[in-house]
Image (cartoon, rainbow, N blue to C red):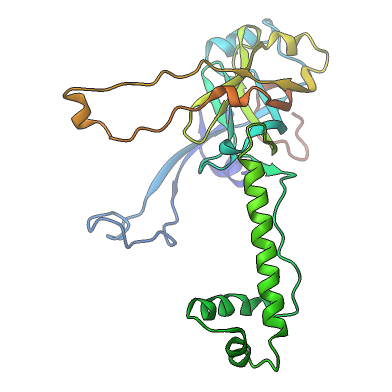
Length: 311
């Protein structure tokens, strides 16, 4: 970043804006699935045009006299919004178990940012009991059992003098499978809920904080909005001396239940026979999120600070 801000050509008569074309490194691109005429296969370089702009952080939002209105009119950000997602409680297990998982999508003005999938925490798991047999031999024993081998034959194949370790493994595996079944049964209960951790900060640029708001939507694995927090007027942050919303646990407001689409006639021939099942948003009524937000004022800068130059 430092080299780019120093060496890339200046743009828009502003020292803090740099622009350049960068050649992409395609050495690690898998070429097996590429078209025969793909530029990568033909040895042509791929380029992307990048523009960087440096902003200085301020202690307070710029007033109209300091160029706040002018920056907003030009579409330039006057602040960056930091939304910190820590953890949540009260999530149904089916949301965690989906491929894409549970994510939060933060919106402000025309910008939006989606978090990574959350990770379940404090979830009861089954643990395999300790056995003196080398764990690398577990799969060998299982394959021999599938082939109809008895304990004495298995012990002989493994080079064991007695069947004691083989029997210990069988007992441990039976106990482990019983634990798995018990955990699975608990997860199927109607009131079973888990905690989820994100520990992520979402950043959004804001052009007109005085009229903007913050909304945080909860997405399931099918990108359905199952609930939301907000909208919270950004004026609440502006009125705070620290330009922040303090950390607190906020309950989720459920989204309207999606309507089931019924297709028939000619349209049924062209649409998929199996459509994803609509989420039961009522299952998320117990969700609460540990969240905070802060607004950091910005001003277009002349470039990265360095020795001998102030911001």
